[in-house]
Image (tube, rainbow, N blue to C red; front, side, top):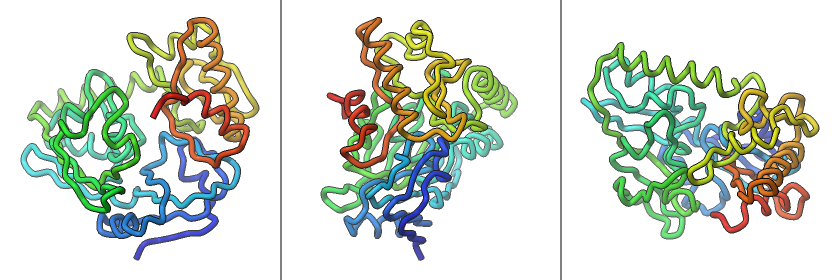
Length: 302
């Protein structure tokens, strides 16, 4: 039986720890339940672990599906069969135990497989597109299940065929490579250490990298040159160790975060004529001040 809640307080579902009341939220626990919900055409958004999301602090007049309870996976030889809600670090650790390499980069990601595949997650010279074989999706326009090959997923930097919101990931197949267990663990340890030194922990709410890297450059570098580290807006603050992270350090609202993001965006645009684009997703209703700022930062993007 699917858990469905009306007027649901959403902030604790998000790693940002920000968010107001959502009209309706459903938590399916199987692929069948997810498909049944999608077939009703009553839901606006499908999310996983909400680790890359900023919810509005105002009332959100939307119906949302959260897939975090759809978390089954199976290893068969060097293949991994995984459903959309499994968290990346779980798979990274389980693959290591079996001497399977290719998922080491996931060890520090708080997100789930659905989101990682959608945005073609990558780090440390590894990426989703390197190991994905195929994916089953639900086509929202045709109301049917389809299977896509890696080529049909149309992977690009932080983008895939899922990015447009017309298809929802159900499950996927990965192909990994055999390697020494200790060597895999050593790489995972290095990745964890890198994240500890360069990226914030979830002690302070955050949603990972705030802006996408522009072509042949780094958003963090540009923001650092604009002296954004440590800058504050209400309860939101730019991380002092890396300028491309915004923290909820003191009961920040979504307006605090978006206003600070807009300042970051504007500084880089004015100084370098480069328009940074958000990597995080914003979920809120039209007509608000924060929505207008978000539109400016995302115009001409999909």
